[in-house]
Amino acid sequence: MSQSRSSAALATVLVLFATAGTACTKTAGDTAAPAATGSAAQQVQATSGATGCTPERYNGGVPKLDLKGITVGFAQSEKEANPFRITETQSIKDEAAKRGIKLITTNAQSDLDKEIADIQGMIAQGAKALIISPLNSEGLDPALKAAQDAKVPVMTIDRLLTTKTACKDYIGWIGSDFVIQGQRAADALIAATGDQGQVAILLGASGVNVTVDRTKGFKDQLTAKASKLKVVAEQTGDFTREKGQKVTEQLISANPGITAIYAENDEMALGAVAALKGAGKKPGDVKIITIDGTKGAVQGILDGWIAGVIESNPRFGPLAFQALEDFYSGKGVAEKTIISDKEYTKTNAQAELVNAY
Image (cartoon, rainbow, N blue to C red; front, side):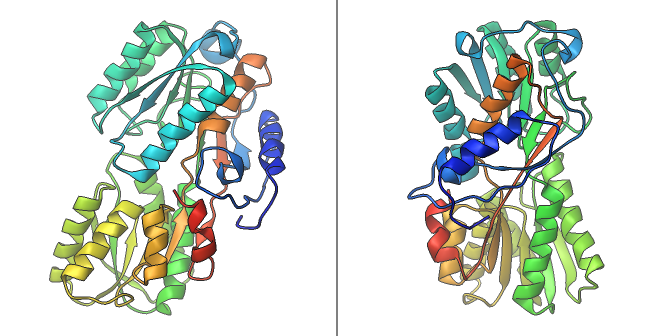
């Protein structure tokens, strides 16, 4: 995915995305600066599940509207102190502006009750379609019920509503294959450590499929590869830098033999780096593999503190609005759209730093 292509690659992907019943793979190119659109934007790897969700099929039927003539609401789940969330929200805003679509946004500040209230509030303000980045994989039922009652379709991104049904509770979902991310992280850590040592896992937030899948992918891959790495500790860092630092301080104190860390996002990894510095460790003493692709983590590779980063691309705007366009035009939307994610290594970190967010 790190090979350079022209900006026409994104246009090709969006055309392929419109044919939601097919799987496709594209490579991402370079860009002069991180952006929500252009060659740093998400590209479709595959679609799966039921295809062709349209207004006629959605939850017994909803009005077929002109996307440019309605208000769309975007519900952000987490505080925008995290670069992933900052980039995600900006991508949605940029694409709405590019398409001339009226957009209202909210931020739940990592509070599920607030996200429910935010969604209900946007419906009350006249939003006729919603893009939701769920805080948790479960628990949004009151908000989804309000949307159903108001005949407001919902497109979901990033975290999957694991107990809900596509084209009934939501149109479809766009996101990464988090299990594969975990598998790739395991492969990267095996390579970085020479497949030797004790590993601590900094788990993401509880109650979300991202954490479950990234953990499963990682552990299953260690087993599949008959790895000699030994997981000696794991504790939630809630996807935050502060808790990642605190948890790492505790884990390395209780387990001084730890030589590797798998962090399930970059913020926790950067917190781990701070903890290691505080403990008098030197770059490379503890090998860290993480997932996201933020500038701070990629810079960490260049500085020697981080061994590698598996990307999780937050630039959902183009694909999310293309999904709404395909929904209302009658082309239909697939149940699941999996995006491609690159990998940052010592070999490409310098060249790819501009593509990090």
